[in-house]
Length: 505
Image (cartoon, rainbow, N blue to C red):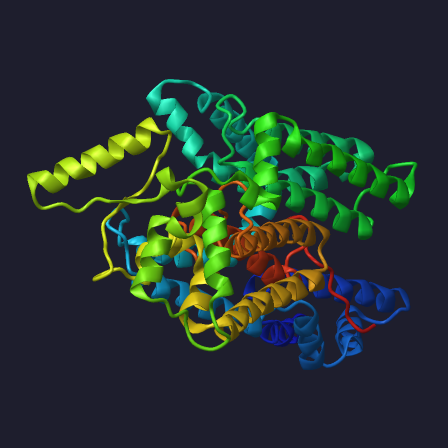
């Protein structure tokens, strides 16, 4: 009997592609064989003969192993992976060949290397790691985020510099809140209100004590990621233990999300930031304003043809470069000042022009080019190399090329959410949905900024604009989606609860 059983189980195991699962499925099949053997023995059949019959009743081991492998196999998404790597390569090549301005570092493309490694590592081990260690990861992550919040409010240099990294902490705080919501899902509305309150506190605090909006765009991503995921979790009936049922929970999420949304206009500065987003033209003061950059981008895009890049004369380039196209009639003291001089007389003229502009309340840019050497790169907004990839594509190659570029980005998101939708495990789905919505919201805000409607600081365009540290965070979010989809059918909701195998009786 032992030989029959051993040969049967080894043959089944050979058909299972995911090796860590072989022992689990083999053990379940072996237990089933023992149960059948005991049934035959109870009918008076000798033990050895009963074992042979039990193995025979299981059926063809190759067929059983193949069926189990089909049900519990590692999933692949070749189309999504292909598009992902194409966009990564596009971002890498574009960043490496960009015309850098003097104040920028020319090694931004190197961040794609750790970004790619982060994507590969998280795709390989991300979901199993979260699944096995979520109990201690939750308090650790929460403690680190709270410590960072406290330290970045301090005025001492070593502490307030932590605030520079708070943007990325906010992005990662979204999946933390969803993991917390899932672990305490049996509390229904109570845990939803707690999660929304924690997210609201995170949105209320960034820069509140300094009155700046650097992190408001990350907060918008957080709000969209958490609220959208809570709605999708409720759609799957993940929350339990609430007397109001699904409709009552929907109402709680929508009402709580509305309250959280009010935090984006809860102060005068935040209301002004929102007004600059919806009506940038009404808030332009100088060429240094992001609202001016928005107006400039819209003007340049309006002059770009369907096919082929924008064509401007040297005089037109100078008008855009100095800001004369906008300020010459509105506020001449804001027009840029030519800052290249070779003699003492020219230097004195330059200093006199600067002093006069400042005395009149102006803050013009210093222009280091003239009609003989001005280029398109000189007139684009500062940091165009990272913040205006879509607009730059349109300006260089025309609207048709820009439409193709946007289509590729849209295709990536469609494939991404198609994979997320197929994930069956509730925890894997919840976290993947949150990561996906965060990546989508970043892309939406980035695209709006490229068409002249920028909210607070720029987000990054996942995969394409490196953003230095941002690409590591975005690759971690994307890698987790890959990992959850990959292991969805081979790892259960808890490491100690592997998926059950079903054999033909």
